[in-house]
Length: 104
Image (cartoon, one colour):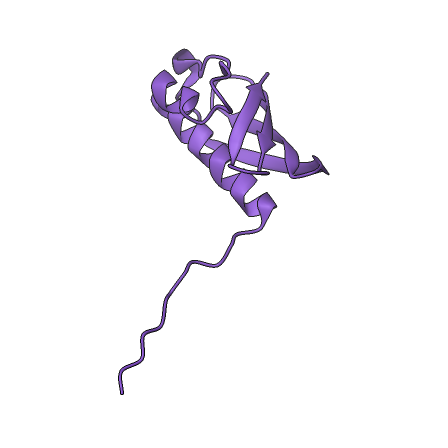
């Protein structure tokens, strides 16, 4: 008797998906990769520039707050050695697909 078991990746919680896409946005901004950053946008929305001239940050933090219905406000703080911290705000949606609605 042969038994087949399907292995499916368990669904990740919405906050974890929001953190993951925010990490992807940070990686794109650290590389100054505008195309990759735009690929994370919801439905063709244009995201703010990834500021390739400030790519040399040493570390970053993410502060994630649920604003309801699968939407998350994400504050990204990039820390630099010789430059003031740079703060970006992202609105992440996790309802149907995980994407970034806007960056400010």
